[in-house]
Structures are given as structure tokens and as C-alpha cells.
Amino acid sequence: MKLLKREEVENKYKWNLKSIIKDEEDLQEKSKEIEKLLKEVTKYKGKIMESSTTLLEFLELNDKLSRLVGLLYVYVSLKLDEDTTDTASQETKEKIEKLIETVEENTTFIMPELLNSSYDQVLKYIKENNKLELYTFDLEKAFRRKEHILSEEKENLLTKASINLYNSSNIFYYLNNSDIKLGSIKNEKDEEVELTSSNYHIYIESKERNIRKTAFETLHTFWDNHKNTVSAIYKAKLGEVEFNRDLRNYGSALEMYLFSDKISVNVYKNLIETVHKNLDKMYEYQNLRKKLLGVEELHMYDIYAPIIDIPEKSYTFEEAKNIILEALKPLGETYIKDLTKSFDNNWIDIYPNIGKRSGAYQWGSYDSEPRVLLNFMGTIGDVSTTAHELGHAMHSYYSNKHQEYVYSSYPIFLAEIASTVNEVLLNDYLYKQAKTKEEKCYYLNELIDLIKSTVFRQTMFAEFESIMHEKYQNKETITEKDLSNTYYNLNKLYFGENVISDNLIRYEWERIPHFYTPFYVYKYATGLSSAVCIAYNIINKKEGSLEKYLNFLKSGCSKYPLDILIDTGVDLISGYPIEETLKIFGEKVNELKELTK
Image (cartoon, rainbow, N blue to C red; front, side, top):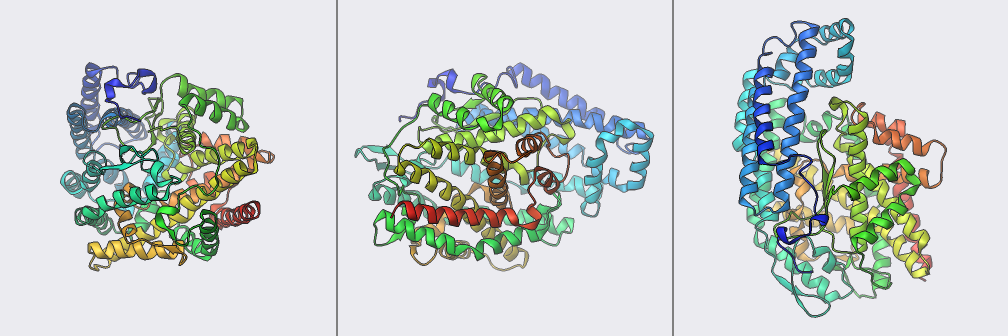
């Protein structure tokens, strides 16, 4: 598929951003409105806690400012991701970022001033003014942070310093999206094709082993050639995190990132320990994969290859849409009706184009419908990715619709559940629709691979992060070799001795963008485990399961995430969902083994 320029792509395949910001004039007007609101907010400096009335006025005004800032930042980010090489979009985003920096610099007084008062005084104000009841839980969460908030002077200084200190994520972003040039390889038709981050998965999943190997070596050679640069970028990220941890008096970087969601460090550690205890199931699966591929040695470029030989099929996006709508029918008529809006109202940016950001994601703000970025190439994996991102979109849509702004943004800890429920439902639908044993084996293996990549692999990433942040905190030397060797040894542990950990795999850590959002990836594993339990409850029509799940989608951040999950019927504190998911993984491996005898 030839990459087109952005302007060559038909509008029906592109998302519509005009319903967010109409044009440049609208953007400028909203920018001026931010400046106006900022002046109003700063008038409350020193007065936030004067009375219940001033507290309410301030909170409502600050919400307006935050909503508008969110709207503009989402818009300029989406616009740039359409074509990351577009200088006009780069300049616009930089202008908005500077405006946001000004907002942050001038609002650093808020948290120190608020927390300088007592929580008892806040509770007294809430009793006096019932309109403040809306903010009860939000204020409770704020006062939990009291011991980690600095003085106004220090907060202001930290905000100003962050402009220059926290650039590692942006530097990696441009290397991984704008400046990455992988070169070309030959496809199965012996045609010369450009290898990109977006189409890499096609070639690493090829039936032709030499193509998989070439794609693997081409991609990872790029990162090998940039290993010292990326190591410096990532160490800068480690430094940013450690600087904040030390300044804000947290015991560890992990504790700092789990604090806001009130997640115990033990949840993270228990995940790693539980996966370690079940690595024998991963080894068993890799042994089966080796047997079914018929290879003497199983290499890293073999672990994504299809092991079930079914006729290849390329899907149009229209076909993908119809499959998804059928597969998600267990979620009810209302869900399907609302989901259809995403297709009919241009919420989705479908195909890759020159300069477009790689991968896929969902994003939006409280005052705009969610938007989904795809790089759809027609594979069954792309169909699954579309269902996944639409799960995110519907989670955002329902939370925004049913929660006030202050509680509309669901925490990252819960973010991967709705998307993965969609994936599991899609897989179950395709498995049941399969007409041959080979097709059933294929979709069975897809579920196995989903658990493998989301629980085992993401936990491996989580362990890598934990090790590196702990090393940095303990002031241990971290070189490129330390980073790459740590990753390489973890790869050998998680895949087992019967998989050849090729030398180039040691550089794979360099291409993982989530490492620049520290301690995020473990949530994929806990999220999938929760999603598997929810999805199978719905599939099996367990009484109340659908209603509980739909309420989950509407919950936003109205409670702490573990409490929201308990309301859904999933007790992650007990660790049961992880154990149950790995048990299902082992059962599915055994089922596949029997079907392929």
C-alpha cells in the first residue's frame, strides 16, 4: 500500500477536527479566553479559603479554565499527529504549549494554598454550602497529597524549571515518529517496500521466515545504531522522575506513580511474582509454537508468526466495522447505537499517510467527542486494534456524558479494561463463527497471544522499569550496556531457554514509548486480567454483569479505581483476576495442543 500525502487521503477516511476547533480564528479566540480566565483565577490568590462561597467560585472557575486548556491541547496534538512533519502544526502546538506553561506557572499557588488550610475546614464549608458537595471526593484526594506538595515558591520554581527539564519525552517522540528511517525490505511478492513502524507488524507476522528475520534485523539494527542516543534520552527521563521523587518526599518512584490512585505497591509486586510463578505456562506455549512452526530453533522473529495455516484475508474498513458491530452486540442495543456514532460522525482517522504518527490511540476532551487514530492496513490484527481503540472511545464517551467534569477522566489504571473487553468479545465472536477446525485454532491462538503479549510481555516491561528506576534511585551506574543487558536477561527469563534470544532483541527496550510514561505498562496486565473476567461474565450472561459493566463505563473517576472495579464484580486486590487469567491461558494452550495433534 503506497503511502499518500495527507491532502491526498479522502475526507471520509479522516477524522473531523472542525467540531473541536472550527478554524484558526476559533483557536485564537479560545486562546484569548484562556488568558482571560487565567486572570480571573489568579484574583483568588490568597482568598481561596476565605469562605465556602469563595471556595466554590474558585473551583468552578478553575474547572472552566482546565476544560478549555484540555480542549485546545487535545486539538493541536491531534492536528500534529496527522502529519508530524508539518511545520505549521508544530508551531501551533508549541504556541499552545507555551500558553499552557503560562497557565501552570501562574496557578502553582492553588494546591499549596488549599492544603495550607485544614481538611476539617473544608468539611465545614461543604456542610455550609451544599453546592460544594460535588467536590467532596476531589478535595479528599487533594488533601491526601498534602505531605507531597511544596511551598508556593518551590512549586512555581519547579514549574518554570520543567520547561527545560522535562524534554526527554518530546525528544523521543520526534526520533520515533519524524526522524525514524528504517530502509526497505522485500515483501512476499519479492517487491521492494519501505519498512515503517506502522507496517512492521505485517512483516514480523509473515509466513515467510526470511521476511520475518529481515524485518526484525532491519528494525532492531536501527535501534542498535541509536543505542547511545536513546540511552541518554531514557536516563534523562529517569533523572526527571528521581528529581521529582526526592523533592516530593516519596519512598520510591513506583510509590509516587501509584499514589494518586491509592494503589498499593504490593499490587505491582504481586503482579510480577504471580507471572513469575506461571512462567511454565509461557514456556509450554513456546514449545508448542516451535513444534507447530516446524523449526529446529525458535527465534525472537518467530514468536509472532502465525502457527495456524488458514487462508489469508484482507479486510476493508467497512468489513471491519460490520464485524465489530456484530461482535459487540452482547453489550446491548444502546452501546451499539452509541458506538455507531464513531463511524458515522468521522471520529476515526483510518489509514496511514506520510508523516502520520505511528500506532493507534484514542483521545479527546470533556467538551469534544473522542477521536481515534489508526494506521489501518487491512489485517485481522487491525480489526482487533480498531475494536480495542473504540473500547477506549466508548469509555470516554460514557464517562463524559454521565459525570461532571471534575470526575469525568477515568484513571489510567482503569483505561485498558474497556478496550480489552472489546478485544475478548471480538475474539469470542470470531471463534464461534469459525467454520473449520483450523479457523477455531487460529482464534484460540489469538486469545492466547493476547494474554501472552498483555500479561506476560507487559509485566516484563514493568519489571524492567522497576529495576531501572530503583537502580537510579540507589545511585548505581547506568550505561547503555546496563539497560540493554537488563532487558536481554529479562527476555530470556520470560521466554525460556527453548527460545533463542537473538542478540538484537537487547535493543528492543529503546522503541517502547510507554517507558516515557513511567509505571504505566503494568496497568495493561491488570487491565486485561480484569477485562477477561468481565467479558466472560457477559458472554456467559451472568446475572447483573452487563449492567455492572455499563455502570463501570460511566464511572469516570468518581471513586478510587479499585473500588470502581469491586462495584463491577472484580476484586483486583485479592489478585484473583490475574491468577484466573493465567489459568485460562494455560487451559487454552492445552486446548490448542489437543486440536493440533
